[in-house]
Amino acid sequence: MQIVDLSIPLEGDVASDPPGYRPEIEYVNHQQSVEGLQAFFPGLQAQDMPDSEAWAIEFIRLNTHNGTHLDAPYHFASTMDKGKRAITIDEVPLDWCFRPGVKLDFRHFDDGYIVTAADVAAEIARTGHDLQPFDIVLVNTAAGARYGQENYVSSGCGMGREATMWLLERGVRVTGTDAWSWDVPFTYTGERYAETKDAGLIWEGHKAGRDIGYCHLEKLHNLESLPADGFTVACFPVKIKAASAGWTRAVAIMN
Image (cartoon, rainbow, N blue to C red):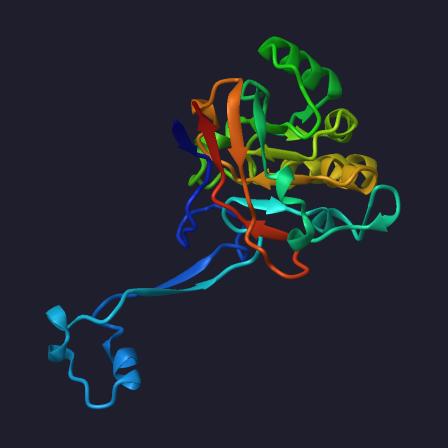
């Protein structure tokens, strides 16, 4: 069995998110933490401990969409399935999160390109994969190779509403991308909105969840190392009460 890590690390000094949305991590090493240990054991001296060390610990300020994470339908809108209450991350069925996977290779599409249903159907046909309900569909974009670079957030193609609905109507309930967002980068959507004033262009892939509730993974990594199919994806989210997303150590498992 081979396990392929599909997750990025949480890092505070990498352009993984727009300014103001990045993780903040304070690292406390074994010497810096001695005072904290002494508070539990009055009279303890640093030299009493092996190598005068206490523990290493980190204090982290995050939002639920930092790092590789699974979005719940509640992130997209307050409703799903045409009017039902949208489920939060602690309510996502776990059997959605451990399923056969298929990878769509869209690295050749330009940044800002809106993927269509025809594009998805053609790529599925090219892979030869027999798409089944609840398969996990991963989208490999040009953004994957740019993680950590300043242009990462504005990189890659995005999944349009019709492409997303094509998958959802066939029973897919978890999708994923190595880009910052399932949709095209806001840079390109902003340009289109400025020209048309059509608000339907904003987050159109996400908003498909109002019709059929689904989850998606964002900021995946290492998708280029995967075959088109023949692997299982595990992406169980951290259980955060009533939250819109949960961090996950997403992996692909291959025999």
